Every structure is written in structure tokens, then in C-alpha cells.
Amino acid sequence: MLFSEIGLGPEVLRAVEDAGYSQPTPIQEKAIPWVLQGRDVLGCAQTGTGKTASFTLPMIDILASGRARARMPRSLILEPTRELAAQVAENFEVYGKYHKLNMALLIGGESFGDQIKKLERGVDVLIATPGRMMDLFDRGNILLSDIKILVIDEADRMLDMGFIPDIERIVGLLPKMRQTLFFSATMPPEIRRLADAFLMNPREITVAPPASPAATVTQAVAMVRGEDKREALRHLLRTEDVKNAFIFCNRKRDVALLHQSLTRHGFNAGALHGDMVQSKRTETLEQFRQGEIALLCCSDVAARGIDIAGVSHVFNFDVPHHADDYVHRIGRTGRAGKSGRAFMLATPDDSRTLGAIEKLIGREIPRIMIDGLETPDMSEGESEGGRRRRSSRSDSAAKGGSRRRGSSRGDAAPEAPREAQAEAAPVAEEAVEARRPERQERPERSERQERPERGGRDRNRNRDNRGEAREGGRSEGGRADARPPRQDDRGEPRRRWRDEDDGPTVVGFGDDVPAFMLRVARPVARAVPPETFDGSDTPEA
Ligand code: AMP
Picture 1: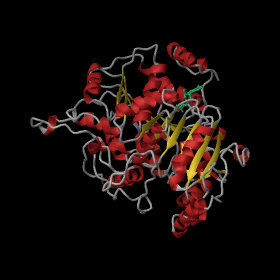
Picture 2 (picture 1 turned 90 degrees about the vertical axis):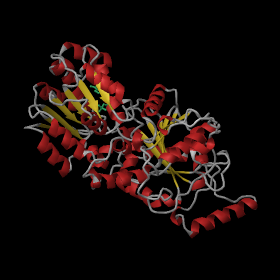
Picture 3 (picture 1 turned 120 degrees about the vertical axis):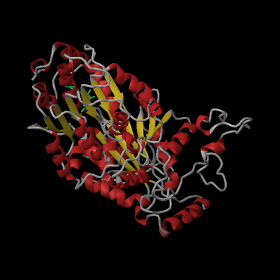
Picture 4 (picture 1 turned 90 degrees about the horizontal axis):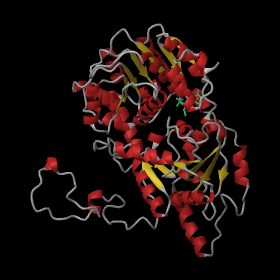
């Protein structure tokens, strides 16, 4: 089928042509005609299938006639994360360039003032994350009585993140007479129940998952000791032909530390995690997209849905705790039929999680060795054995070094790892989706912290705490984590790996020197009322 046969208007078709699309994808082919007819749609599809255009294109056509009134948006698209919401807004700009539709993006971490001004001007398309949306509604800045089209995107992720009570509340505020488009990558019973409640006589559309991005990803895992991880990463960055890369850490604080370390070593790196202010998140992602930053140290906030073409590498600096996160992470490379390479650093502590990943993907990830670094015995874990190994390492080093050495490329076993990697059969994201028993996605924490707590949230709060503990110690809003921050997810004391270049360790604080202590304090002559003090009186070190 051609786009011209699908029923879209000439302006939208022109924008589609400008975007360089020749044919609709299966979800577009199946969904667009029904959306244009005003039917509700239940789409089982994931990112990468062209899902966004399957609802944005017909929405632009439908909304082309009619005008929005102040504070009364005509359509609402709910997205689980700010990044996904921003991506959908970009799609609207691309496809709606021959229309004069007003769009507002309501996401946390950005100024309320600007968002309110946009709402006042009248909005045809409102794209929002649930938290910020409800905040603005509760402040009386949005009236939802004119919503004609509702899109709930990534519903299963909304569920994972604890947004469903918000979604239910939002839907309860919308007119009964509306068109609802509901998309989810998977359809567990809870999602099915929601779909039944929200949709009226929907057209159900299921599309095969995309030609998986991971199908073109060559994978490898380097077994290293924890304290060697940064060196191993630098070695890979220098020996691999890295154009640009996502480097995933499990915790936000480690993202920041790794970013600092890489920058000190002269790498062009940026950082992205959920504790950063939104303007910085957006700016960093854009810089990475534009190639101004080559390496993006990030948490799992960047693992799903982020669509940046031509990313050459993904490095898992940490083995993700949840096996499906691995698949989402490596899916950031090898997109749109391009090849990509994914490396992971695993320590003896990671044996079990690595095993879970390999079980999930149904194959062993080829092992590589890093030149100059000892390959630990993975069966030893971080127990007595690990400590014994460390002491024997210093012994052998003192004796002139009889350590086992290898090469990730080029030396002792130059091509073997690459061949092994090339043989690694592709991993399909969809296969993982199908095989995993239950979704256990990490909540994207920040959205839920941006609004005041309301009653009846205990279930979600637990979920949040769990997610926060997994990604970092302290929330965006500064709320202490429910779990002591210096323990990892297995309840073991956290270790911090240091490089010799990481600056002095401050006795008494370990590595966790509070930021304010790193600033040069200037005496403040006058008392500053606490509500006006923003730190600007304190010069940066
Ligand atoms: P999505 O599933 O919406 O995240 O889209 C994944 C990617 O497919 C995005 O980079 C889109 O720009 C691209 N895309 C969407 N529709 C088409 C199409 N008909 N032909 C080619 N690429 C498309």
C-alpha cells in the first residue's frame, strides 16, 4: 500500500514525503484508516514499528478543521516519560509542518509559566506526562471538557511506573464522547482491563514487533574485576571504532561519576539520568543527537524508546539487574537496519544476573578479554575467593606478573572475539517480550516526584521506592530513599570503584563529598532569606 492510498490529506502526505517515507509501516497501514474513521483503536505495538506516526498523522488530519479555545485542548496524548513525550512532540512538528495546529508539551522539570502561557493561547494537541498534566489540571490551568481524541501510549510502561491511577483519574475527567487510541507493547491482563474500560468497540490491531534493532547488534561481554571496569571501558572506547555510544550504568550517581572520569580522560562525554533538571536532560540528549557529544553516560531513563539513528555502540558499564533492561539498552544501537556493537562489563558479582540475561535471550554472549587486565574467575563471586584472588594478583605482579592476559582486539587473541561476536545470533526484542514471565520495568522515577503526594498511593510509592533504590539513592525532589543508599540491590554494601585520576578521597566522606563542600564559600555579609537563596551568592569552585 502507498501512503497516498491510506486516506490522509494532501498536506500530511506532503510532510510524510518530506520525511522520506515511501510506504506506511504495518501499524500505520492497519491503524490510520480506522483512526480517520473516528474508531477507537487498541494497538499492540512497540516503539520502532512506526507507531507514533500511526496516530499523529491521522490526528493532524482530523484536527485540521476546528479551533482550540483557551485552556481547552482538543486532543491529549499521554506518555510515560518526558523523553518519549518530547519525541512525540517532535513528530508532530515534522508531520504537522503544513498545518497551523498549536501544540503544547507538558512535562515535568520545565517551567510551569511557559506551559500555562501555551495553554492560555489554545492548544490543539496536548502531549503530556501524567504527573505534570495532573498538576496543571489541579491548579485549574486545563479544562478537559473539549478533548476529542485521547491517546494513551506505552500503556504497559505506564503500569510499570505506577501511573495507572493517574490515567484512570484523567480519563474520568474526559468527555465520554471521544475517540481513544490505546497502545501497548504487551497486553497483560491489567492492561486489557484498562483497555476494556477506556475504549468503545475498538479495532484491535497487533503488529509483529519491528525487525528488531537487536537483530543487527553484535554483542560481547568482558569479564573484569570491579576496580578494572573503567580501565576496561576506556580500552574498549579506544580500540573499538566508536562513533557514538550510550554507556549504561545502573545507578544515577555512578552515571555522574563515570561521566567525570571519562571527561578527565579526554573523552567527549555527557551524562543523562533522572536526577538532572529537565532542561539539562533535553539539552544533553539533543547534543548527543547532533553529534556534539559522542558518549552518553546514562541510566535506564535512556534505555527505552529513545530513537537516535546511527548509534554505533552501546556499553553496559554495569550488568543490568533486570534481564529485559539489557535488551532495551542494546536496542539503542543497530537501529533502522544499521549494524551496531554492544559490549558489557561483568564482574564475578554479576554471574547470576549475566546468567539471567543469557537465559532470557536464549544464548550465551561471547566472552572477550581486555588486553592487560586479568580475567577473574566468574564462579568466585565477591566472596572469600575474590579477596584471595586480589592478593594473589599482587603477589604475581610483584613476581613479574604471571597474570592471565588477553586482548579485546589486536594482540594475543586478536580476531577471535570479533569472530565469536559475529557468530552471535541476533537477539530479538520481541522474543524477549514474549518469553519474559512478567514485566518488571524500572520506573522512571522523576515524573512521580514532581507533584505533591496525594492520598491512596501506597502501592505506587512502594513501586517508586524500589525503582529509586535501583537507580540511585536520592530522588529528584530530594526525598531520601526508603532503603539505605549505600547498599546495592542485593542488600550488600556498595562498593565504589575509583580511578587514580578521580581526585583525592576526602577522609570521613569516602567518595560521597557533598557538592556544597566542593564550592569555595564566600562570606555572605547580609542575611539571605531562605526562600530567595538559590546558591548564586556562592561562587563556583
Ligand atoms: P516509532 O515506532 O514511532 O518510534 O518510529 C520508529 C522510527 O520509524 C522513527 O525513526 C520514525 O521516523 C520511523 N518511521 C515511521 N514511519 C515510517 C515509515 N512509514 N517509513 C519509514 N520510517 C518510518
